[in-house]
Amino acid sequence: MNTSYDFGQDLPRNIVYVKPVAVADLPEEIRKQAQGATTLYAVHREDGEQLALVADRKLAFVLARQHDMAPVAVH
Image (cartoon, rainbow, N blue to C red):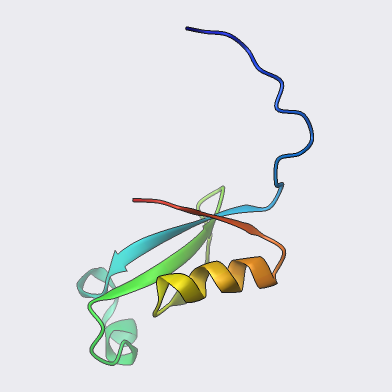
């Protein structure tokens, strides 16, 4: 089914994506700051630019909302 739908102007404009990141895949300097965590959460703009790297998924969502952004989970 290929039916076009007008979503209008009600969609959030400042969408950011929250995704888990394995600490083992990060540069050593950041791994040292991870304090034993195995996963951190990155907040990215639509163009892929990383805005934040935090220790907790909930914190990533709160941080985004505090900055008037609409967070979306990436699996």
